[in-house]
Amino acid sequence: MHGVEGYKLLLKLGHEEEAFVCASHILFGFEASEALQFGLPDHDFIPRTIEERLVPLVDLMVEGVQPTTLDRRFSSLRKRYVDNRFLMDRLDRAQQTAMSFMIQISEAIGEPVEKIIGV
Image (tube, rainbow, N blue to C red; front, side, top):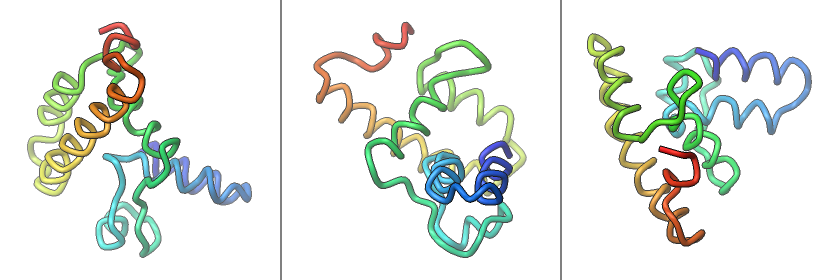
């Protein structure tokens, strides 16, 4: 819930844009109806800019303090949330979004993102 708590804290401190990034990095964002389930306001929290999309990608490529692949990270998340149907459904969508964006970034920089982070 660090994204939700970060959102609330940053909003309280008057940092609306940063608060949005905090909330929208959770599983590559939520539609309004999904956001409500996390105690967020009733509007979309979908990362749109490259910077907003890099935050969830990087977040998903770290397990604890170690760099990891998206496949390993999503496997770990599925094991952790196996009993949570909502999150399991969202993990599938988030993995597709993350993989697509990672390929886009890799093509733009001319080398695999995973190579850059050392996995």
